[in-house]
Image (cartoon, rainbow, N blue to C red; front, top):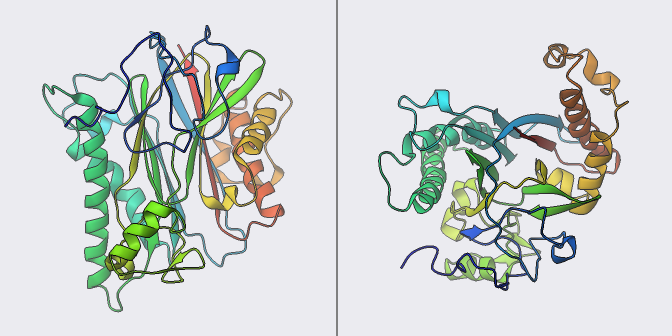
Length: 358
């Protein structure tokens, strides 16, 4: 059975779309300027009548920016990766693609080692496992590459964790975006989110490109219970808040898995930016609220960087004439600061990815 047998064919006839969040191997159509805004909703890929417009021939480039705050935690357990150009990591450049990029956010718990390990190794495993040569079903192979890379990263970390004395208890959520020319592949496990902001006329809409994995969800809880684990107060064994992760070796026998949900989303002419963020943001910001907060800053031509950022070495290299970079740096840092002000006690990491059309 093909992994995409459940997907509707390209047609002018409207088709029903699941009103839940993105599920494994979802195929999300790009936005079209000719598509009525009324036919698109703004939460969790909730569109009742989605047509499949033709993919634009416009070329896109992506550029990532990060804002992070420790919050009330003693240490910073989040990690991230920004690779606007992934191609130099290949010993032999893939012939099928002329543009590749990679972005990842990793929300660690019980220590920073799992998140940092995933940040250091997940993209390298994707590169080493990336489809080579002529592939009959390239979409399938790319998605299986992502799944296998998550599994390998988890296995490698657990080997290190179990060899340590005492053994490491660290775990991490993981969410990554892989750009292949004009198509996004999003893979995530845990409760970090990816959101795509689109402009439709004078309005901003958004699509959630990730699905949270919580022990409170029926299917996740069923798997945990079948494995012999329990869910108490929304946590695995009364401790772990997520039902899928990298690391967390002490919970693997309880049904905690390393299988990500994978979503494919062609870029469209109206796409503006991506938000990748850990739950430190989402605990105090709704998705729509966060998109509006960020959009307002990006549309403010007078915006400047927060004073606390100006003296930092990594911001001194910003071209003062690069208004877009300043706006994005300001947006991701200001919303991270605001999340802490609103009472988020967790680490907060917010990555913004600018989508530029050529």
